[in-house]
Amino acid sequence: MVKQLRSFGVLVLAGIFVVVFGISLAAHAQSDEDLTSDKLDLIKSRCSNSQVALQQIEKRDAVSRINRGRAYDQMLRQVSAFNSRFAYNKVSSPDLIQITSDLQGAVDTFRASYDKYDTDVSDAMKINCKQKPADYYSMILKARDDRSAVGEEVGKIVDLMTQYRAAIVSYQDKVE
Amino acid sequence: MSFTPPYTRLRRRTRKVMRGPKLPLALTGAIVLSLMLTVVSVAWYNLDGSSKLDLSRPGYERERTEVLTNDTQKTYDTTSPITKGAIDDFLKEYDNRSKELGGYGDFGDGALDDSNIQLKPQSGSSSATQ
Image (cartoon, rainbow over all chains, first blue to last red):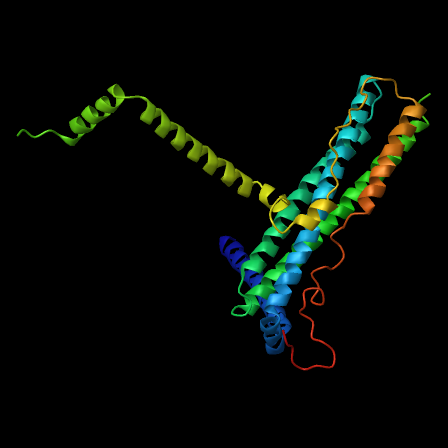
């Protein structure tokens, strides 16, 4: 019985190893496929232009991040005050409190995701892409993923704001 | 000449400094303290992400004008009764904010695509030039 269990464990471990190894190999093959020698030459030849374009994008994104952060803070202040008003008037509103908590979490995640993305862009600009085009492009791919994570968080906040609005409208029928 | 251990010598020297004029000691203390505080504040500025959003840096003149500032912090009534009118007022401001947010970049526009960062081969040319 013990022997059977042991051999089963070994089989499971071997299976996990094969799957993980296969996935990493496939990912490596994909990145090799993406970075052809033509692409590397292109990166080398347009290195400075690319980094200038990256800098412009970073500046534009910083403006969006600052404006969004300020507007989110104001929105959370308004929403929290309205929740307090519900509580003061002894109107039970657990749904509003839950959505507000989710909103706060999503705004915090948005900030953290942006920091991560901005670090990627800064790191990419520090790389000498004439000498290390592959490193540069790999950092660009990372920044692209992290930027889309920021975008997803923005979408999540929009959804939560819509939910909060719908919940408030439903209370409109309950009050005098 | 008698031998004095280093610890005793250091103690004597410290005592001499303590008994001497206090101004140089106070100045040195103030400089060391201010240096320590500067190091802590610069490290904090860099580590907490403030440096990434600091548009007062040189080169960000145009971006500074695009950032909307709101000097007055609005205070909200938290004790008045909940009425339809109060909910309408809330929704009016809430919708304005949603509209305002819609005007800012949403980070979902593929800004880092190859074409936007000058890494897409130009059509009709085999080799790229800078």
